Length: 328
Image (tube, rainbow, N blue to C red; front, top):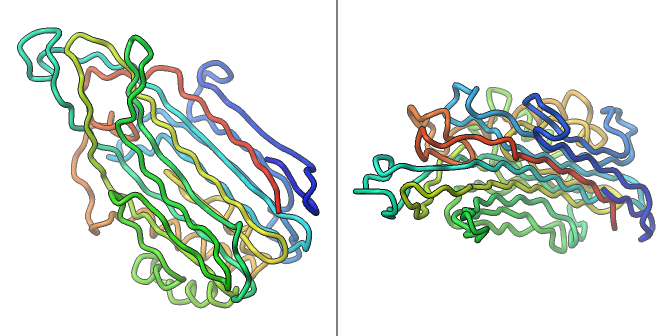
């Protein structure tokens, strides 16, 4: 994370955790932060980036959410802004037998259908409804790469969502077509954010202009080829980035976890109680499945890398990296 004041580079902050190199216990979290996240109404500016990894085999939830990133930035200072980025990755070693793949013998190839889970939220806001938001953004990418024994890499899954600022307080959403995204103003929380949703919507509208993208929990299938008896790796990587502008704007993104810092970034634009209520409503909204139902029983070995086979083994090569930058 680098801070820019008046266009000049200033303070930086970063954090890296590698399992099991820097820590031997899970879950593990990397954190970087600058500025004020006390939740005080007189907070002027701040940025946070968080990356986390948990052992999916210990979860009883169909979506163990082992990979998670969060990035939040805000500023009411006339000269300062932040760019906050976080990244987390997980690598699994996989060896599938002929029985696993439904083929005759080792060396035979077949198509594997797998499933991953996506959920998250993105926000860009300003206290001036007509503010030029060009340069502000919130977004995340999630990818899965298959790695052969020779080191050859094949992207087998990739998805992204981004809110980009535009003139006159407007924004534009871009996202992969495979994702179900609800995008608009505060009204997108209607029916999803709990019993106090109307109060939350009113609080967001009072800020000025708020753009929200929600990705309620959804299962997405993907496919790759595997050869019986031939080992390979699957590496999943999640990245999130929030970039705000000086003088009354904010941006936030979360993937695979609930927001923990959004309320503190919103408090200076509203108040502590309203900021906490908004964060709680957004967190509830992304935990609702896209069809309103749960996804049924799935192996606890699903998660980011999907339902492949009980022969799939988690290996200790998951790494987390988060860094934050503040810029105009």
